[in-house]
Image (cartoon, rainbow, N blue to C red; front, side):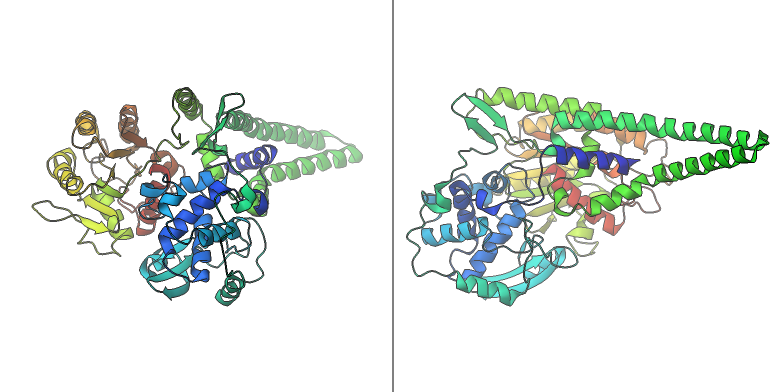
Amino acid sequence: MKKMYLFIICFLFILFGSTSKVNAEEVCTKEAAMQLAKIVYKEVGATNDMFVQLTTASVVLNNASSKPGSNWYNKMMNLTDNNYGGYSKYKDLSFDTVVTNYKGRMLYIAELVLTGKYSLPSNMVLQASESIVNKWGKVWTHVDASPYNIYFGYTGGSLSSKDIFGNNLKSTSVDSFRKVASSLELNNYDEYTTSSVCGGLSDNISGNIINDNSNNETYIDIPVCENPEILKVIYFASIIFDIIKIIIPIGLIVMAMIDFSKGVTSNNEGDNKKNMSKLIKRFVYAVLIFAVPWIVKIIMINLGNLTKDVNFTDCLENATDERIKELENYYQDFNSKSNSDSGTINHNPTNFSYDKVIFVGDSRTYQMCFSVADGGNTTNCSFKGNGNKPFVSGSYYYIAEGSMGYNWFNDTAVPAVNSIINSSNDRYAIVSLMGVNGILGDISKYINTYKNLSNTSWNNQKIVLVSIMPVNDKDIKNYKDIVNNKNIEEFNSRLKELSASNITYCDIYTTMKSNMNKYKLRDDGLHYTTEAYKEIYKLIEEKCF
């Protein structure tokens, strides 16, 4: 029946006006062009290779397409340092401050990409070293354009045949894009200025808040699956479907029994045929009803780009009475803020500016570390303290050890985190996945310590408290009366109540619990498979920061 709900969501999304194809000419604005030009300049501004610069700009736009926002400027503002290193330090700076040379060329490149004149396959989202591209996808091409040594790559099994605007691509070969890039070279770029680029069209926006100065109204860009009004309709529809899925089968069984009894008791051959015909029809109707989920699945597969920017599973998960009230309160708070503050307000409560990430956790975090960051090496990710350094992968630190609980967290992990954050001026997202060892006895200790840290040594950092992940109650061999989902849910609910300006609670338990086929546990019922940890890592990145 879950897929039947998804069908309703598809219908609602169509009803609220989404389209599968964007008119590229209408989304090129000077604000978007300047923002895109800033990123391109920072990434590859020192080269004069048009192919590299155009490809970089298109990759940026592909990455931005999955971000929340009503226009390209908003979407690019929601890119993070994970997408482009150091982005948080210059994204709010003016175009002239960031782009000190080749201004006309950078704006020209941005306009070409925003208008779809140079557009890569939609899944071309990787631009990094060879090892990182191969870790997350496949290499498309390698360019050694002094001073840059760049690998461009894509996710998925093969290159998409369409760009992010829904246009069919004539070719996806590197040579074809090189030829296009070469043909777009100009001798002079002086006509491209901050006032003329994209025909001078303006978004007239600031972050994710759009101010209409004519009537002093403020509009907040809300994603479909976080819109309380849409979620109320889905919630109501889900209740109706729950009722229908009970009533219809019972009704069909009762009517089929009546038809069958009439056929058995009647001596009239004609009546017997009619009753048996009715019985067969009811059987066919029943089969069709139960075939609806498969029909919906086929429909969704064939919707193509219509579903590109909406995660329907998120819509369904958010369509609960508790989550709807939470979102309503959240946006009401933002509305009240927007009447008094002129700064940017972002729709995502977990979206913040940071330079590096520190993971803190027990055996599950330790196993996620060597599953994702250290290529299966089970030694480096183990943090025992006693002077040894945490494992570092890029801008991610891992402070994790098996079978550890509150005492290790307080006595070993916290000092290690303090040592990291005191060693530089960077801002850190401290992501804590503690709690499964000592569920019943330590929750109050954790809460008090988190509160204290948020006001003292971690007061200038962002603290992300991740919910304890689910277990398989049946397979837990030891401490079944302690380590179970009931106690985990109680721990998570207490953690969720913790309130501080720099603390965010991130619920991954609900998502994982509803899809344990994706997040598979090992036979011990507590730890996850290597592939599951990779999915958990992606989920944490997506939902928590």
